[in-house]
Length: 206
Image (cartoon, rainbow, N blue to C red; front, side, top):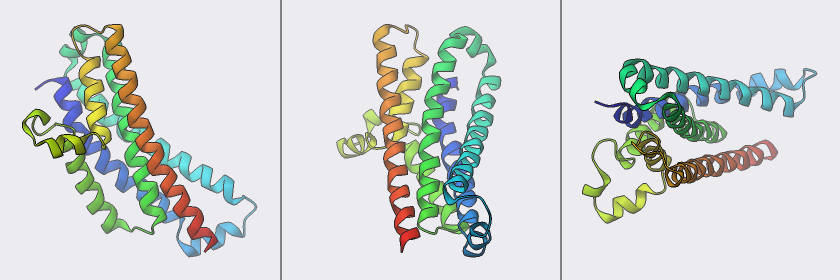
């Protein structure tokens, strides 16, 4: 086992845990009776929404940090060999991955998802994304259809970034590749969050 393998497989824990945890935070705050009580208070809806999102973001960071640090501690000898700088770059990639389940949890809560659905979606997406990211088996051994579909999930780009960050030669070209991978992963999260925001606004104005 290697640190790269840990990060690849650890994506499942991050994805499933963040979707369920964040989804429950948003869903709990969207309960009608709780919304009515908050509407009667002096805090504006915008301020409440920002506070809830900040709490969800902090929870996401905590989950990412615990999962990532377990790998860093468990593979301390490899971390020392690879170098702190490269490992930090790989950690940035895993953090970019954590943004997608945060967006998914927010979107699911906008649809009114409850704990059972959040658990199901979290586990399903966690397994699917890690599979399409090449954690379970190399993408080169899969069909062209699966390889094409893999480009639409963040794990594909994040795993590529982790591989480049932990490579023997971190050249300018490799750094550019990592930056590109992280950019695509971030855009996927932003796109999902935009859908959730649109659904939330539609629901509030209904």
